[in-house]
Length: 407
Image 1 (spheres, rainbow, N blue to C red):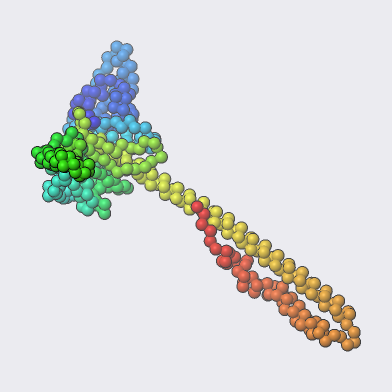
Image 2: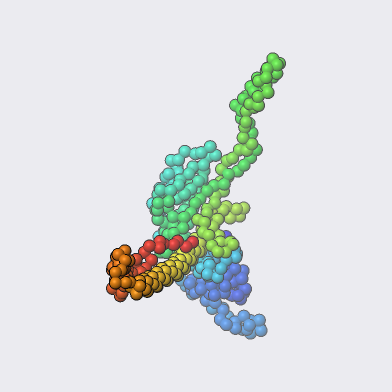
């Protein structure tokens, strides 16, 4: 829960103990504490001041200068949840910003807050006594009618504290949400229910008595109907609004086992109203976490797509090489076949007599034409036409091989 000080009280505190010790009590770095002091024009003890005091030497405090704005100094509560360095730095920066308190210009009733309150006042309570707004141009809320006036004070205060962190409200498809210059965060407010053992109403007691009487009459008549288990069922518990409100920021999944704080609830000594600065800090930290996760996902997707492209390129090169080797083997086979044809024809002609066989002569004539055709196909022009026809040794090398999808 946030701690609040006047400038004079904070000045007295800073000069009452070393900054490093005071920073530990606030669960922040001494650098952040010095930033808060500079932000509010509060002088701090110079280097060596505490050593001189411990040695008994005369030292004097630097008096607190006047300031145009004597607004209180807010030290937001520390979230000790284990987190990475970037989020820890973001939280500390947000706590420094939160020390300024609220932005007065943001305290006016925002239209989205007005619409939400009006919708809650018009809503019909559920069986558990709650009214709700969700989506559209409303803030997501589920509370009792008795808590609406409290919400009317809390929401403007929260918006004012969030404005210090650079947030405003915007209406989106899923409902009203907080938005900074770089990120959006949705919120929801709900009221807890008290559970008490159910006490039967007079009507329920009458139903149970009527069932008992009917069962006894069936037993006296020896009717089998009394064996039917139709006892009326009543709830075991009664639920009623507790008046305790809670606020939740949207879920953001991070690599860490525990993410930024996202739940704030009324407790024994704290209320949502007393935690507006803490909630605003949590809002800022969660927005940073959301941005980091989005960038991480984008980087992972980019790396995945690049790896997929590399695999596809390697697979394409392998497919192209395989087809080219196949084409070479086919060409060499054609050359070998052409050479054997020529040797066959030479042998047949050497065996011819003055009156060659008519069919062998016809074969040789046909074979001459076939050799000429095959020779033309193995010439540079013939191979060019063949490669174009088969989609080889060009940009269309793998046109017939089909794409591969790597997962």
